[in-house]
Amino acid sequence: MKVERFASRFGSAMALIGVAVGLANVWRFPYMAGQYGGGAFVAIYLAFVLLLGAPALMAEWSLGRMTRSGPAGAFTKIRMPGGRFIGGLLFLTVFMATSYYTVVVAQVLYYTARGGIVPDPEGFYAANFTSITSLNLGVTVLVFAAMGGVVAFGVRRGIERLSRIAIPLAGIGLVIVVIRSVTLDGALEGVHYFLWPDLSRLTGASFLAALGQAFFSLSLGGTFFLAYGSYLPSSANLRKLAGMTILGDSGAAILGGLAVIPAAIALGVAPASGPPLLFFTLPRVFAAMPGGAIFGPVFFLALFLAAFLSAVAALEVIVNSAMEWTGWSRIRVILAALAVQIPLAMPSMVSADYLAWSDLLWGSTMQPIGSALTLIGLGWFVSRGRALAEAGRGSSRPPGDLWLFWIRWVIPGAIVVVLLWGWSGVL
Image (cartoon, rainbow, N blue to C red; front, top):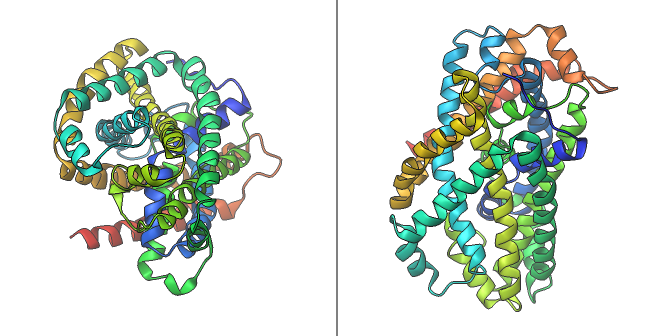
């Protein structure tokens, strides 16, 4: 199977940032910061992103570029024991996660069309988005169709072209909302809470939550970035791309927090509102905010663009893998995938508990496991020289043995800690 390449440095950087930036940045990050220590949580999160996220990004891209495969073939090509099973497991992870994630993306699209303001947010959401209503199903099918349309055009004409436009627009939109948020009366208290690292607010849970958010936010998982790594040209500097991706991802998280937390505090809404913040709290914030009829749709449009690109990346991983396994054409695989995905999404429309447990299993658990398997694959089943050469290709300062030690031991160990803590809390 011939593998496409990204056409330009800027386009590839925007596509990679588009994978990383999503609901985790603009929705999950603000309420996590509110719950786990404000500015102190933000500082720990940024440290984990730099110390663990950047080396892991380089590892996933290295394995993808080296093998010119996504999860379908990368692990078998390096002769990793159980490689075909691992590839199938990670394919299943993305396939299941895409179904529920797209339901939320579709709901964000509808709130964008409504300007982010609805009367009686809880009642409105319960009436329209907690069952298979024509509205819920209709917008979900629409988003799936749009995802299929982008992926049908391929890597350069579809994903890269959209990313070049959508990521800058999303960034501009967030900046506009941040300016309005931080200039509200009483908003400076929220800015201080969000950015000032008051260490007295920290608990053990703060460190573990920040570690989990770092992996979740960057979309590390041996799936998205493994596939997109196979599209990178041999001359691409992985160190620079990692820096740009982290800057874009962390920047979106900081902007998301500044857009939400100062406005919430200024208008008397608790910043630790939890997941309902997106569909219950924010509509009330924009309804009460001067100019909310303008800033509400700008915020939700920025969120939709970021979330949609992540959903497109998920479908691309599915298509990439299925094409390699079946030999089918891109269009045929897309149609088959969507024919299964749409019915698979329906339980998430009916049950919030099903959606939450699906996210816990496929997102919060299998995604870190996938990243650990990728790091183990590159670190232990590829020769030292080959791994370092691939990671350093295109760079004047290639990584050394410390990077290899880091991906072999430190990052997988951190992932184990996150998973043990997370599931001990659940059980």
